[in-house]
Length: 418
Ligand SMILES: [Zn+2]
Image (cartoon, rainbow, N blue to C red; front, side):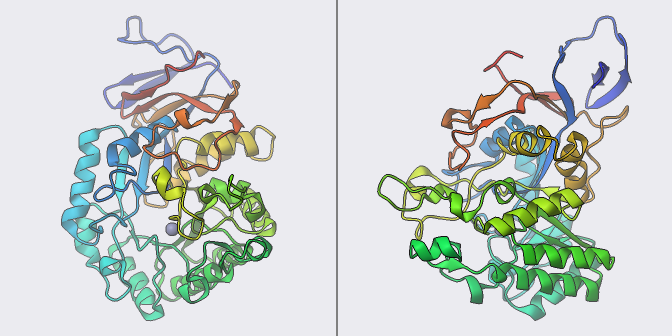
């Protein structure tokens, strides 16, 4: 790492030089010893506004994002009401602009009401600001409808983000179907419920030429399908979440009452060790295009329910970079530049966003990380309204010192010295 000076004026980086570049700037930020990266981009978050603001809203979600070093996130349409019509999509984008902390790009539903029965109006949703189409939270069950969706999405040039889940194989499950689910007599979610839909999507992408993106990939068989489709040159991309890289079903701890802790419950669930290792291998060999948190806040009383009844999802914005940095970069498994690309340039590139590079003329979306000083994740660490994370208690490196979005400082840590 070298010492450089970066001059920001208005919304942009205007000069990068090795020595003094301005004699009396408004503010000098001494970043000695810190790591300067382009603002991170998260392809999948749930900000719960409108409808479930007690879990999170666009403002608290944005605060969590910038605390984690993210300057852009892609929000999922399973709000209440659902983002399946132009007016709500436009409103969500306006709200994010008003708050002005982080760019919260809306997606829109593939099917009306996420019901899987009829397609939404893709052209009007795109005109309103949707940057992708997805029924996330559910998979589109009908094959004919999903094929049509990919064909029509190609016409309007939007990616289809697939929560790949064949409900005939997963319905009623709470955790991965395997030894752990059998031991605790909890109904399991078959790994093939994901893979059969990923295989279907890859096939339909080949047929239609549409951009098929696999959200939160979690199984070895799904990854194999993505690898094959990419090798054949089809428009298939995939993201993985930090928890599927670092945890497996055997890690789910017991609570005081002797039952499984619902803070380890998400969909897709923590899979087997073999699936986790396949995710790691795919990250390292380039099969994976981006890292996504699937930030899914839920209130403490909801997560205190028995694991069968608690909602799916964990938060992830504040811990994503520290987890990947600590467990992949610091130990030499993944180059730092690759980690940053997976979390910025490539993540934004899925949606055609130009980001992930610090250059003269580029938007000043910047983040300063402290890579050297460890910290322990506790509940007070989270800016999110919710605290449902399996990583509480982890010691990590890579805490954010400062985040700048389009030239404005949107997060600055007062909690620790450099
Ligand atoms: Zn999902």
